[in-house]
Image 1 (cartoon, helix red, strand yellow):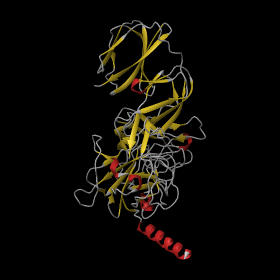
Image 2 (image 1 turned 90 degrees about the vertical axis):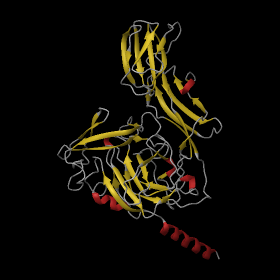
Image 3 (image 1 turned 180 degrees about the horizontal axis):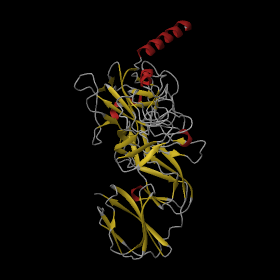
Image 4 (image 1 turned 45 degrees about the vertical axis):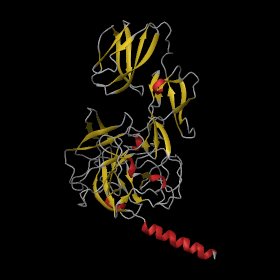
Amino acid sequence: MKKLIFAMLAICSLLTAAKAQYISSVIEYIPAPGQYINTAPWGIPTSGNSLIGGLEGSLNLGAFGGYLIFEFENPVQNHPDNPFGIDFTIFNNALPNFSEAAVVYVMKDENENGIPDDNWYELAGSDYFFETSIHNYEVNYFNPGENGADIPWSDNFGNTGVIAANSFHTQNYYPNQDSFPEVPYQNYILGGSYIKGHIDKSNTTNVKSYRRAFGYADNNPRNTAPWTIPDNPYTETIENSGGDGFDISWAIDSDGNYLDLDEIHFIKVQNAMQNDAGWLGELSTEITGACVVSPDNTISGETDLVWFETLPDTIRAENVQLNPLCFHMGRKTQNAIFDWSLSMPDAQIEGNNLLNLQSSGTLEITISLTDKPEISHSQTVYVELNNSISTNSFPEVSLYPSPAQNYLQIDGINDVEIQIYNYTGKSLLQINQYQENNRIDVSDFANGVYLIKLSKAGKSKTFTFIINQ
């Protein structure tokens, strides 16, 4: 009897595997420049074909903006019985502590013409709502016209850089025109959503690119079959198939509003990072395949998650604005109440989630939900302050207008040193001898929360201010 039962289970498993929907067609593949482009098996036009029908393919998107568009044989349903709400999973060659995160977009064939010419909707992952994320980012890549050369680039914010060539890959990293005729010979522009990520190059032989919480391809390693049972994206443990699961319910419109799509027909994967990983080269998303999830309402797990914006490895400002988020089923929730835990006794969280630091050292910051303390997230940073904060006898000053628009003024003090930081502690502006009522030009600053440190006669005080232009 047992043999019969095992035989029946084996047949059922084979039938389930046979019914699994894998990629049926790669519609478009336009890579950004990168060390694997123009080389087999990862960066040639036929790399897309390797993804069809299974999960052992080899395709590389190159640097920021490189993308792939594919479809399954049948539309992907936003099925209410899918485990954790996940509708499809994208697999990759990710390693622990090395994420090369890509944004995923979906499209419904609303005009029913069978081609992806309707509206793309981004699936908003954990980093979508951070101020360091850019949703209209563009990079212009320039062909050096020779093998083994750096690829210059410029972006639509005035920044420039290169995709650095290395000795391991000596071909031209710019897509060859005979292989990718859609890519102009001299230069081309790729655009989409950008996320900052978290690169740690403190150990040059063991560079790390830390995983994002959820919602990005090439972010989590694969595990084991059955591949149609998705991993829970709201926990750090890899429980089922691994890879990166996606819920159609994360789709947002151009204004950041969630949509309710019943099904989608096309999927676009775009490298969302523009980072150099030292001797490992540029961060460049790899894809090995994708499959549709099988509905199963017997599989359950945690569906709440907290996350706060990645901090720099070293903080040098006395005040840092933290940006906590809470998600339920991958959608951002409002009015969540958080608890903070800090490993340094003289550090504290002030109103509006402002981190106040008094001394240098290693700091672990943990956030949790007040009503579900088991839902938490931690980051460890090093605090390096040049001097201790001293607010005793510091003059009473006032900052205006509030919120600031094109300028900021300070009353009540003269001959003061001013430093302005963004919420991650990056210094943006320094004035050595500020005089009362002089206007500080902030017209080039983006809307958001900033820190301003006033220093005089060995004493200092830090304030927050808002720019809303």
